[in-house]
Every structure is written in structure tokens, then in C-alpha cells.
Length: 414
Image (cartoon, rainbow, N blue to C red; front, top):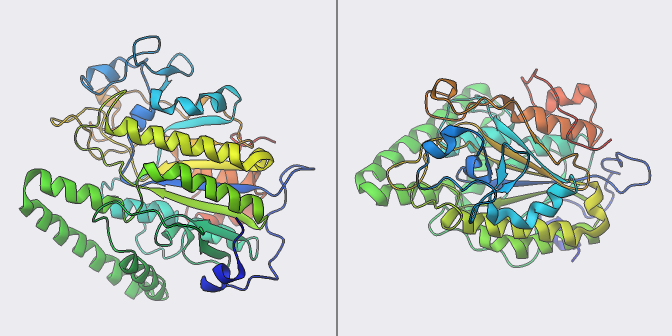
């Protein structure tokens, strides 16, 4: 399934005369590829990669903590401290091959618990700055000339907004949005206004404040709906039109077909909604388990269908923030802070849970309730850009403006 000239012209780009793109990171290999999977709504990283060795994990989650490895419906042991959610069993072979890893207690170092604000800043690559109009992957593509990217959701994500690369929707049937999850046309208009107002800092700040004000009004209106209705509205809005995880296996197959057919497609962004589990989250069974199972199946399909290209692929799975350590009164979790960042691919040096684990003791928690962040997600993303794509140190500054922290290159094979 190749993207046609019509696909690229419809996206506003010529279908020929593209630059060479990013060169292979290793001699005798194909061009590097990078797929980012955005889990909108804030997935519970403490269930994805569960710290069963920490006594506070089970104590603070009486109904949703997963049983220890070896028990019925228990976790899949990773390293004696952490376990993989049993619904993610399709990914266990990748772990065994060293092609799956996690950076725990990872995230964007801000205190925001707003889905919309945190998602925008995550995709812009500038946590704490509300006026950045371009996405970090779009800026990254600009460093290689005219490389190509595809996205899977109904509207282009901010991650791919701006920059010089050619961007198009993945061909084929468009996955259905989550119910009442937002208007793709409105999102496209918002992205255009982001770019327009970004030309002048005064207008950019005013536009950001106006958007924040609207979110506050919407939140107040939702609060007036009362109880579960307000919660349901928030959970749907957090998806921003992204389809549910059940669509991902078919989408992953089409994505692999496109990447195999068109060597210039070196980047892709997949979006999945439904991760805002405020109620009835479940443990080994339930809402979260069902979505994780579909996600795992899709990632396994991508690995299989890419064939030889998997060797030169990195997949990063990220979410805007984590969820609370303690379960709430409705059998779910609320907006948190630190999370687990996933890395998969034949180019990944995995088989480990990385990051400095801060522990779940109440005194170690962020604001007394959340997993603390000890690794800035930009350290990992910059490391992939540097080692997998060969991005020079000088360009990393432009990729993540204002970031002066470490660059973690050890997650990519040399």
C-alpha cells in the first residue's frame, strides 16, 4: 500500500524531488524509522509496568493492583521488581529479544493535570511553554529536508504541525473517533491559528490565555452536569478525536504496508484514545486490560509486518502524564504525574526497566499523591534523535528549545 501522488498533493506537497532523508545509523542497514504512539487520556503506567516489588503498590490499590508474577492472572516478571501487565503478553517475546524496554518515572516536568495543556506541551517539546506552535517531530523532519510522515487519526496532530517535511494521512479507511471526542475540523482550525499567532509573542500569549479560559469554562459547564456525566465528558474530550485501541491492529498493518512500499516514509504518529480511566479501571481484566491487549496486538502486528525494516525501527509510546498512586472511590485512578515511557524496535537496546525509581513512599510522591518524575522525556527522545537518526548536538537544541539536560543514547543499538 503506497501513498499516491494524490495523497501527497492533497497534503500540500509535491510527490517527487524529495531529499535523501535521514541516513542509516549503521552500515548496511535501511534508513531509520521512528513511530510515535500517543496514548491520549493518560495511561496508567503503574499498571503497564507495575512495581510489584514496592509494598505501597498493592497497599494503595486494593482492587486494581495486579497480582505478583506466578499468581493467577499475575504480572509477567521483568526483572524481579517490575512486571508487565498480563494483557501485554504479545510483547513478551520482544522483551526476551531485548527489543522492548521502559523508562519509568518519566514525563514532562510540569505540574499541569490538564489533558489539553499537557498534550500540547508534550507534542511541542516545550513543557511549561504554552505558545510553541510547532511540534518537535515536525522540527526534526525539517533537519533532513523533505522526508515524509504519516498520521493515523482524523486530524493532523500537533506533533507534526509546522516544519518542512511532507505529511499526509495514512491511506485507507479512517478509524472512527471516540464518541463525542471532538471535531477534527475544529482541531485543524486551532492548529492553523496556533501557527498564525505564533508569529508575534504578544498575540501568541493572548491566544494561549484565551484557549485556557475556554477550557476553564468548559470544565465549569461539565461540573454543572454533575457526577459521572461530567467525568464521562472529560474522558471523551481527552481523546481529542483519537480512535479507540481496538482499531490499532488493523491500522498497524496498514502502516507497515505503507512503510514497506515507500522508503521515504521515515516517521509516523499513531493516536489512540480511551486511557482516562477514572472509574472501573480493572486489574488483569476490565477496561484498561482490554485496551492494553489491543495495543499490544497492534504493536506485535507492526513488528511482524514491517519484516526486515523492523531492525531499523524505533517505536516510542508516550502519554501526557501518569495517574495517581492511590486508586479512587470508583475503582479508577485520577490525573497524576510520572509515567512509563515505552521503547520498542529492532533498533532498541531494551530488555530492561530504566530510569531512577523514586519509590512510592508518600514522602517521595509528587505533591504527596503521584509518582515523581526522575527522567525528563526529552532526554529519551533526544537520545533517539541523536543515535538513531544521527542528529548533531547543535541541532538537538533546536529540537527541544530550552532543554539543557542529559541525552540518553543508550536505548538505541550502536
